[in-house]
Image (cartoon, rainbow, N blue to C red; front, side, top):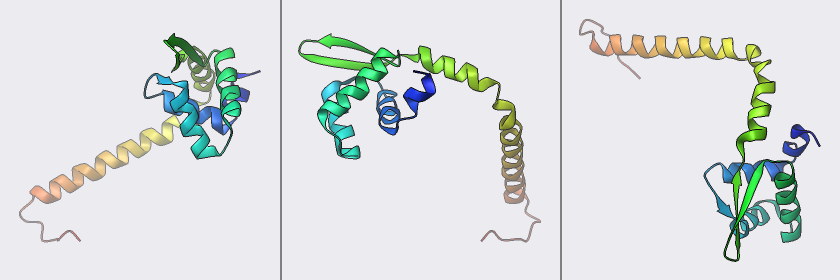
Length: 121
């Protein structure tokens, strides 16, 4: 299974989003996912298994609990693959950043110019 096949499922993407904040017990992950997606605990377990088997998560035992965490390896591989496409969005984002900075600068200059008779809405 390709990394994008693994991430193509919204439940698996959501699990990774939840794990991005740090390690979580399988039970908490399961409860959140069951509530948000309306799926059974065995279905959540299957999604966790897919993520684990394809290297997106790690799991460790803590007593009777199983703690899941993101394994960044496959995400780095996806990021490397996407690098070839960044040229499509990087320049427009840089241009947007320039325009935002220009607007902030102009606003600061207006606010500090006592001769400017315009009023802000």
